[in-house]
Picture 1 (cartoon, rainbow, N blue to C red):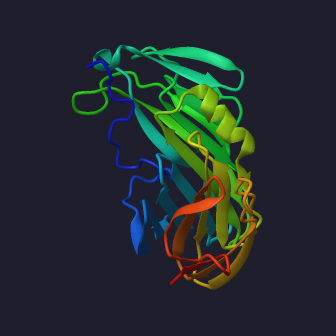
Picture 2 (picture 1 turned 60 degrees about the horizontal axis):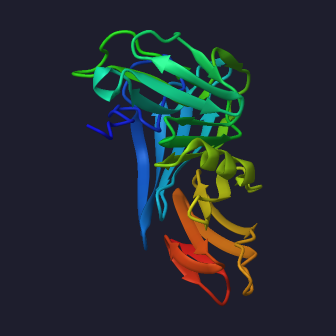
Length: 286
C-alpha cells in the first residue's frame, strides 16, 4: 500500500483509437521477435477507414517504445486520434490525487474532481515522479480526469500521448499518423525531461518509423519498425557514446511487417532483437 499502482489495466493501453467507433480492432497480421533482454512486436490493424500499423518494443532496462503509422484508405475521412493511452488509477486507494509534471511546471489532479480535459504543454510529461512519457511527432498530449468509479473497483483517468479532434483527411493513401513514443516506468520528471531533450526521430523511408534515445541508465537505444509490407534496407547513423570506437552506423534489413531494437552501453552492444553482425554493424531481422 506504500507503493500504490500508477497504471490500471485498460483494453486500449498503448493502442488507442483513430475513430469514434466502439467496434473491436481487426488484426490483419502480426509478428513477434524475441531479443536478448526484451521483445519487439508489430501488428497490422484495421479500424474504420484506416489501415493502422503499430509496434510495441520492450527494451533492456525499463523503457517501452510505441511506434505507429496509419493510412487513410478513403477520401473525406474523419480522424479523431486518441493515441498512446495510459489509464492512470486515481482514487482513494491510490491516495486520492495525482501530480502531473510538464515542461511548464506541475499541477495536482484530484480524484473525481479533475477537469474533463487537461492540455499538457510540450512533448513529455510525468505522473507522480514515477511514470514518464515522451512523444515525438505526435499531436497534443492530453490528460482526461475520471469522474465516477468508471471501472470495476477503481477510478481511472486517461492520459493520451497524442490526442486530436475532428481532423478531415482529404485523400486516400495519406499517412495520417507517423509517430514514436517512449514510456518510462519508475522514472522521475527530471530524468523524463532529460530523455526527451536528446530523443531523436530517425529520417527513414515512408513505411519505417524509428527513434534513437538514451535512458536514465545511460543505455543508448535504437528502435525501428517497418510498418508496411515491403522489404527495407536502412542505414541509421547514431552516436552510441563511449571512448572506444563508438558505433555510428547501423544497417537494418527488415523484411515486411517487423520491429527491431539494438541497445548499447558505454559504446558496447548489450542487447538486440534479431541477429547483429558486429563487424558489419548490421542488424538482420528476418
